[in-house]
Image (tube, rainbow, N blue to C red):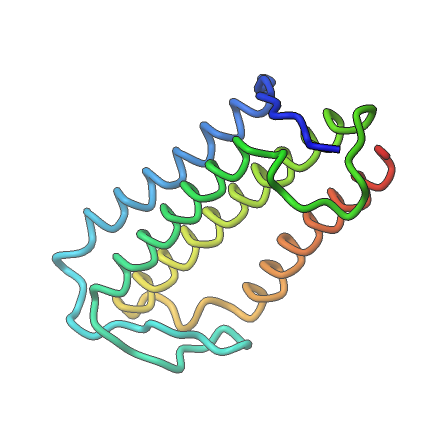
Length: 164
């Protein structure tokens, strides 16, 4: 069966999630704009699994984090507009395509928001470490990040199986 090309309507919760994600991106850009000129030329750019600084680089790398966050946002937004082109763990039929497409789009929206939040905290952590106001990003950053991303993915996959 050829999958139908469906345009899904956004719910109010979808609009709120999009607005929050965009506000976080704007806050990240604002933070960088306010702090960039006063950053030292060499800043922490990498953290080990314990959240300790283990790599340094130029201050331009904080810009790279923001660019990657924006690219992730744009690509995820584009992907969510074409749910019929995505891969699904179950066969898509005429009866279940709308439920599955809605679930996939919600998953992308949640993962997009979580990713932007994580990038914001990385930018904030890099800037705090550059000014020596902090030492590392904390030992819980990696486990919390993994739990959030993998937990959300697992939830929506489970939900997709239930919505067969």
